[in-house]
Length: 94
Image (cartoon, rainbow, N blue to C red; front, side, top):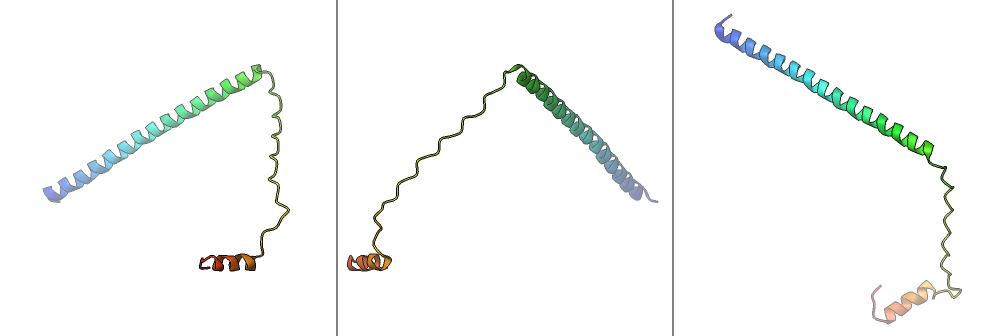
C-alpha cells in the first residue's frame, strides 16, 4: 500500500468517524428536546386538571337561536322563455 492510498483510506475513516460521532450528538440533542417537550406537556396537563378540579362545573352551553329564514316571495318570477325574450328585446345578447 502506498502512502497516498493509506492517506486516502485514513481520510475516509476519519470522515466516517466524525459523521458517526456527529450522529450520536444529534440523536442525543433530539432525545433531550423530546424529553423536555414531553415533560412540559405533562406539567401543563397536571396544572389544567388541578385547575379544573377546583373550578365549579360550568353550566351547559345555551343552544343557539335558529336564525329566521328569509321569507320567499309568493309571487313567482317570469318564466325563463319570457325573461330571455325580454333580454333580447332589451338589446342584450344571450
